[in-house]
Image 1 (cartoon, rainbow, N blue to C red):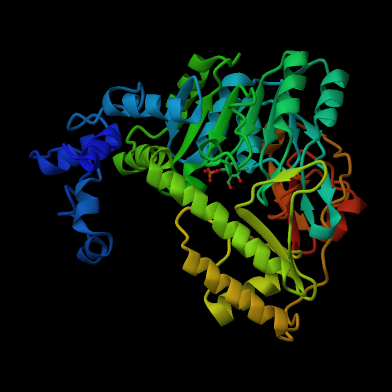
Image 2: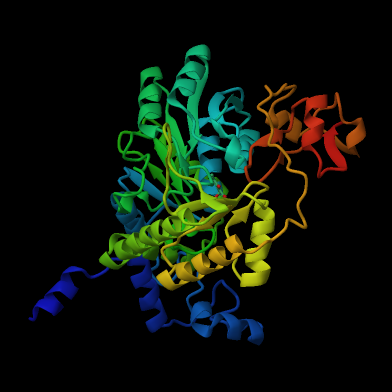
Length: 474
Ligand SMILES: Cc1ncc(COP(=O)(O)O)c(C=O)c1O
């Protein structure tokens, strides 16, 4: 055996769902079960041509052809979840369909109940709000630091978590979003120590941080820093297919894992897509492999290259780590002194055929992904250089809306009560003194101006520019 073949053998990728699906593809059975398109024979030919016969052939659900089941996890699915737990440093991992949204909902359903207080950042994802609507839990809002100059919300400090827990002995859980959408990282190690001091579990919504455990130049994953449960949107940055995510239980977790599993079973479809499950298995196997690690290194090196080149520009700047907070280098939030982020986004789109992750009034977010090449980044740099030296004006520039000052919300009813109340839509001019029935949030930066159950006051009105009508409690 040559060195090369020995090396190839030792580094063989172990991806049980991918293997099982390949076997099912290669040894087809006569199918009299769902999905009814039966390998694409019942599909629209145009769609079949677009997506490919192979994709339709492997579009199947659990239970068939030795592929195992998701609930309870059996066969290759169970094996793949165990491999993922090992790779991410978890006690147990659940594969999620319907994204990290499903993970957050399951955590809320399993670990909270009516009246239970959850300490969480006001800019949490809406799935956490939905979780509270389902369970009837109530939020104790943490105010993150805010970066005025960048128009974004930043890190949550351990001190604010400690204060909140000290002042609210009935707080039963802490739920932190880390990193923020723009890549700002909180000190989860200290927050975890605070939670342990107060004996409450720490859940970390690490939806945007699924690469972290695979490269030492990225922030440390909350699983390593003592979180009890963590969600990862593998589809966002980890290379799996859209809507596939993972929920991990920390090694020394104090939460009720069986309750989480039961909630997932209630929430999940009973016909899980094997393609999505295989893509999670493949993504984990890739990130662990030498090739995947190189892809992460490339994403980091591309981001560093982009940042170095931006540093040479006159008008365009990037958000960097600062005293008190870290950033994930692969999330590059930029702004142009002369232009709104939305205008910069439209220039990139219309003049240069570039799509970025998101844009706000202040700036825009570029993701340096594991799938981007150096040539992609070089093209982006060239375009930014050109924009920097061109006299663009902000023709579609709206008056800059300031994000919401963190007014203490006047909570008149719980999220759940508000959700299930009778509602009506009224003109904004009549809204003062009424109770909001909808989530009003600028996204990004994504902090909620009003949530269901909160009193609408005069101070809210300047932040409701985009609204003519508002849904309120009847
Ligand atoms: C912080 C955060 N948590 C959770 C989610 C939900 O993730 P998914 O789209 O995987 O359901 C998102 C989505 O954008 C998010 O930004």
